[in-house]
Image 1 (cartoon, rainbow, N blue to C red):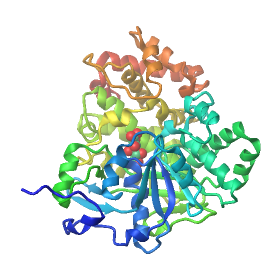
Image 2 (image 1 turned 90 degrees about the horizontal axis):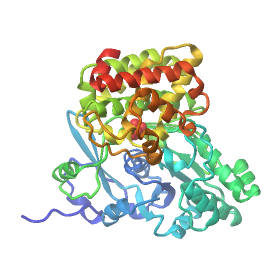
Image 3 (image 1 turned 90 degrees about the vertical axis):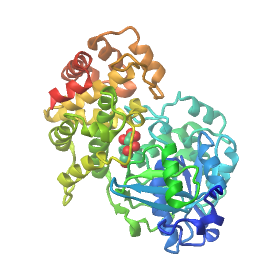
Image 4 (image 1 turned 135 degrees about the horizontal axis):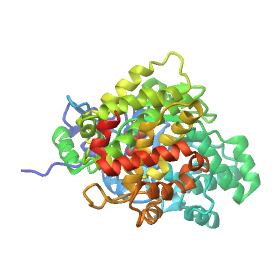
Amino acid sequence: MTKPARLSNATLSHLSKEVTRPGYDRSQTKIGIVHLGIGAFHRAHQAVYTDSVLASGDNSWGILGVSLRSGDTRDALEPQDGLYTVATRSGDEDSFRVIGSIGGLIVAPENPAAVLDAMTNAAVRIVSLTVTEKGYCYSPASAALDEAHPDIVHDLANPAAPKSAIGFIVEAISRRRANKIEPFTLLSCDNLPANGETLRRVVTRFAELRDSELANYIKENIAFPSTMVDRIVPATTEADRATTLSATGLVDAWPIMTEPFTQWVIEDHFPAGRPAWENFGATFVEDIDAFELMKLRLLNGSHSTLAYLGYLAGHETVSDVMKAPGFSELIKAMMDEEISPTLPPLPGFDLEAYKAQLRERFCNPALRHRTWQIAMDGSQKLPQRLLNTIRKCIDNGLPFDRLALGVAAWMRYVTGADEKGDAIDVRDPLAAELKKRAANKNNAEELVTAFIGMDQIFGRDLPENEAFVQLVKTQLAKLMRLGAAKTVTQIV
Ligand code: CS2
């Protein structure tokens, strides 16, 4: 049997005929976007919308992908000329599309100068980011720049060879300004509330620490539109690679698996121009806040709750969790009774249909989205997913038993041992501190007191709120006594 060929420009014509492929001459594409954090999410979302723009004849928006940490994506995609497959899986059927919008890849730690050169090219009019919550180098509770963060300290001392997204952005702005090149627009595509505003805050503060004139220039000249991004993208597995090969006929070292649903709502503020993403499903609005809060609280808040409780109850994937007794009911009640009343109104939007669709998306059996994957980086996710919602409930005198159970499940999870006593691989930038705080604590009372003292997560207000502290203690005690599976059936 002959060895199957690798996906590349030269082999595109060998793709199985059902596979959609870039219908444009890739050699004519110019780089107009530098994207920091070229991970699976970007490749399933923004790069797909942009591929459609390129196919429509506007060739000025090719993407240069930057990895801020490892070279894995570059190593996988460079031999493929940046091409990769997106598999859309509904549970009933899979469809495959090869995406051509990534025109080049750079691994920042190997060559920070090349990243800065790309970012100072006048043809680049947008710098976008998916660097996850921790990539903002901020304190999650206050969203203010963490000035003691090792990468921030490093980047202030070494502006020409930065490590963080913030360091690259500020140095690139400074060089464009010095060379009288029109500024780019900064487009955060991470799951943070007011993500544009948050990016503006950390970038401006970092610039202030370098040079107050530069900070003023940024305040006056740089646009930071906010976005709400949504598409569920589980990590790729070996089985996914094999499925892609048999469906497409070509070897792809890093295909992306995702769901049919995709949503992108963007504030329309791009003084230097932008692709016509609206022609391919994106929505441009004046004010994004209500969309962002809705998505973060309903989707991500439910996701994190399902992930911690589900993992503890022994389930590997979100769709497994949704099938287990009580979980679907728990999430529905949490959405309807605790989260929905905290959301700002979105006139004309069918919230009930949105929530029902979310629960259906969580049930998609083909996605195999691991609870462990969603459980990562909880210290960075909890504030916007659960704690801000709880704050609203407290202010409005609403119940928050289920949200508090989500917080308690996170605490149980980060103790680092599951219900059978086996170790949990807790991935979190604060993992070491979490472990230290959990050490030698055997009851809910002590654990809650230890964790809640982390003001970078809980702020100063929540630890002082007796009702909150008491409820989390009660829920954690229940979890420790009954286990997650039983607790869930009881709380519904
Ligand atoms: C998930 C998100 O891993 C996680 O924390 O909650 O990545 C989620 O799948 C996306 O936000 C969906 O748009």
